[in-house]
Image (cartoon, rainbow over all chains, first blue to last red):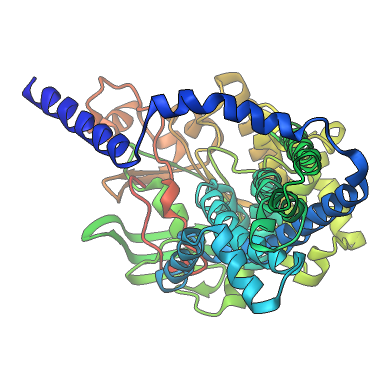
Length: 248
Length: 281
């Protein structure tokens, strides 16, 4: 009983501390609601004259996402196999797992900023940022999927005299392929979402123009691009869902 | 003229941790014999087979299988060793997302070079052997089905066909019928014995039911606490003996259902030969 009370008090204190520290103020939010509508009001009616910008930047976002996801997957799959603790000795999988955890801990925007300063503005640094981030996230899923694979059929294959690579090709890959593709689809969906805001730090795509127009107070134009982002992310989610539905 | 010896074991010992889980003083099996291994769970049946397959190392003594002296260090020799010994498992251990034909073809992998198997090049001979193996187990109509969509009995047939595709000399069957119902179990046992006759294979199978062992084997090995306590022809095994073999199982004569099972974490790769013996073997 005393334990429950003290847990309740501790959680309450933690919540109070957090809301206090983050200057939480319902009154201020209430007073701000008209301003919120005012903001959306300024975006309407949408100014469709930017449709050419919309089209080119949406395509650029899509291209950035595909290239970044592909590049990431290219490294994530082999690294993920090497990071599976039941397949490789500890001095191989531990450093790789640590590396992937390190990569995951860097926020995507920070990665993008890093690559923008290295290779300049445009979609290319976005591709690099997405790729590096994907290696961290996707590689971990690959490793976990392989670790969870039933080893007995693999042992049975080994017992036929198959070599290591043959066991990977005929035993491991058929067992993990659907989950691998499903993870790739989810990664693509997430990357599409992320790449729409990469423009914030100058790494190209739809986000770049949203912030450009906001800075120039051209609200009606930026509103159109926001709509495009929503549509694109929604389409990406739908595509990933379709892929997953067919596989699992 | 005495028959050719395919398995010879002298004073072999297998340890798990510091505990001896199998200790065989003397065992010889000649070509064409049908040997059943019976005994309680944990009596060493599975360990004996895993030792013959080279999955668990024997610490001392002499183990000779098909002229290969253990331990086999040369990978090419190990590969040869593997393809001469087909193994059938209690839980079939097929690749569920591949077709029946592909699973049977896996038995040929030991003969096919990596490059050929990557590009799916099958020689005429491989195709012929796989087709023959599928014919033997009466699964001609189901070649294109995915293995996971088959019933347990059919999956075990695929596993037998896979082992046949290896063109083995010895067939090891580790509780081949323990996860099947009694009628199916008899089908599978009939099939196993008939293919072993047809191809002149030496069969060693571990069985939970002494009745099956007496019916299908010509020789019975009884293990208890990792040691052979009885070795003789199947007709000479009396009921009293059977009771004695199963004496200490403590469940009023009911044979404990699922015996040995490989733990999921036991697969180490690719440093397999030095791996620890599985628990409960």
